Length: 282
Image 1: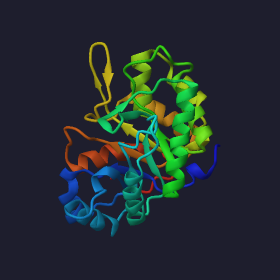
Image 2: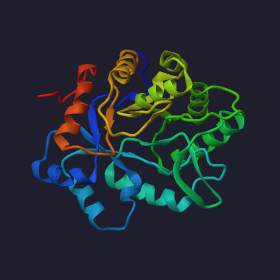
Image 3: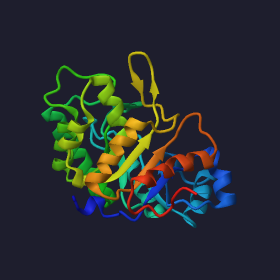
């Protein structure tokens, strides 16, 4: 079974995303949850309610940071002011690692506020790995990069997605946040076998797993995070756990968000597959 510094936090168990509609329930009821994942950018502020809530959460729970705007695939180097704010938040939360997406998203200071897909080229590998190494050195924490859901492909690509991911993480010497829903969505949109994806990536570098729901349309599947996890995604998750052992697992639910208890119940379905899960369904 793969073992490395990237999958060393097997005691974390099952987490859910910390979302505004659930603040009151969590702060008042203090439910038993292994950990919460926060979107870093929501708390990279100087004060106010977000930090007040975060500090209250930190009194009772472990927190892992996940980002949405690092844009490792940008041709420009990482923004230093952004990194300074990020490092300040890291010291506040004590997160064991940082994660963000394998994508690009801005040009010359203009931000798309979206996770744009990469061309899978050797040049993009070098640029992306350089940026990841720079961020990792600056924040002094391991970085885990997340695979995207994909809806389009570049004619310029010189390799497939899992080869690109593997090349990037090996050159950057970083971890992987393996989103198994994204693997399924992309496999359906681009007609590949998820088992080929799993066989092609260095699973010893998986630090964290994301599970989520999606929306199926006539000709495409969209990664919407607004449904329960479907059976084929659970099948991929089960295979990853079989190969990797206990990896911290996070349920994402970001639109049409139901009650806290419903989200938590869906997350805890992962305990069926996760050997070391501490919190299990009632």
